[in-house]
Image 1 (cartoon, rainbow, N blue to C red):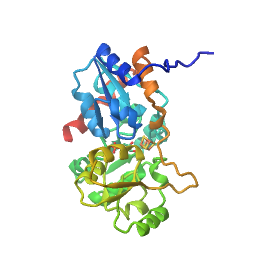
Image 2: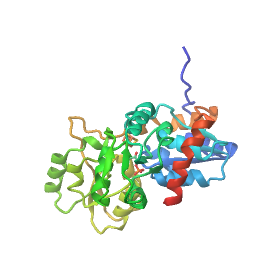
Image 3: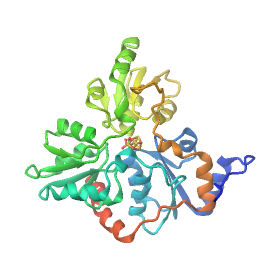
Image 4: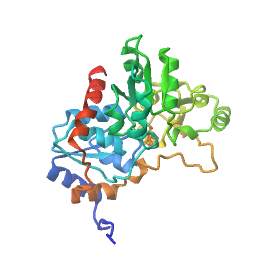
Length: 317
Ligand code: 13P
Ligand code: SF4
């Protein structure tokens, strides 16, 4: 049996990661849902669109991606010749896992005249079958650019899809996928929190169900939610997205007395963390940089096919 690598517990991992960053000429990109330690050691923290843009423009030789698989895959598609390292290759996403490329190919074959719009939270094989990719921060703008006479197929998040139908007035055929984290926020518990903190504003990611979005004072991508908390005069926010983002909300509003309450899930478990995002740890980050693995490898043909709809997204953003 292969033993999992472990880091020497006497090492200062923050210093070691800084040293390895220079050795590898690496840039560390991290999503807002990552553990605070990973956010603190990253060169760049962002939402899915910002991370794709940062990957597209980096001059570094190595991209170390602290996020989930589809995000690192996007970085590789945009940089086929660079080394892309990930702390844990098993960090997936329920939206990507719930939309296998072969089933998606059979689905799109039923709608040959449709313009295929895929949320970036999907496998490269699904991206390769799409006309354009969107993220939660640019989806509305991109859908509005699609000629009005073209019917639209949207995958894989049905809740984001319904939100876009409402926002754009466009009719869309939806793949029935969902995010296991955002789908379980409890409307009832959010209302209970609102009655205890009547001055609180509810902020929600569009992957949440409509019943939760109906109570939101602001809906947007992780970056948009963060910016809203910085700009708003309100003092208390009920945050209906993965609570990793609260680290940046606290940092960027330090000294303002603002309070952030994570929205509770509809289960007896108090935890609403993304189990995939949280597979990444500081130790695994250090080890992947020291060992130069796990690395994200992809078939050249798939890279080629998946790049065009991502590039179209970047051009339209
Ligand atoms: P963002 O586009 O806001 O970064 O969202 C990514 C994600 O995985 C939400 O669950
Ligand atoms: Fe995927 Fe949901 Fe986790 Fe985001 S929070 S990575 S959509 S499972």
